[in-house]
Length: 232
Image (cartoon, rainbow, N blue to C red; front, side, top):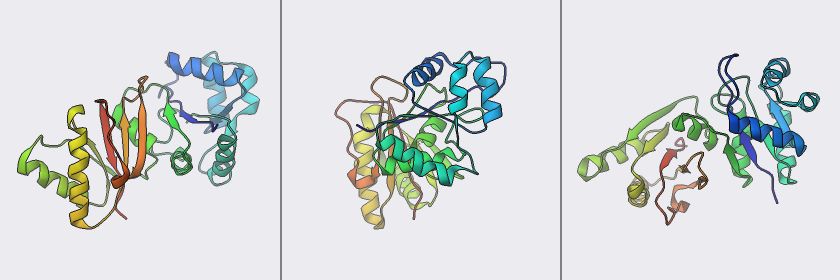
């Protein structure tokens, strides 16, 4: 069985406590001798101790940043393929969102390794981080029109643009949205990868990343965010 990659968001300031679920998960990771990956050792060491996490873990931190990612990403991937899990923290905020962790998420999707995250209050940026798509620039399209010619027009526009696009819709329209997108894609004779994030941070969380034509909606209704990968 493969391990998994867990993104662990941390406070953007030095005074707030670590979110309780993240605190629990990191304690479990230490006790199970799993891999803790941090951006900068000194910064994370100081915050780690302030949050009251186990001191003994500090010596085992793996450094993953713009200087080490090329070397560490394949090694971490190998560890997860062997069944070891990885917990990724940045200096502050959401890892893999506009930082080097994105490459590791990308490689995990390519290797069919599950990616998840401890709770984070912004579903849009969390979905973007979990997608692994390059996102130096992305467009938030929000809720598209519910029906009619305007909906079709908007979908055609969105699927014709090159940038990563983030869409939202109501749970009961997910199946029809995917059908409409597949129809538009056939008309423009292209192909795009899609990331579908359903029930983020909930028990029923399900994340799918695949070519649009291969994405099938779940049988049950689910809150979702759909991310359309960049046009190649």
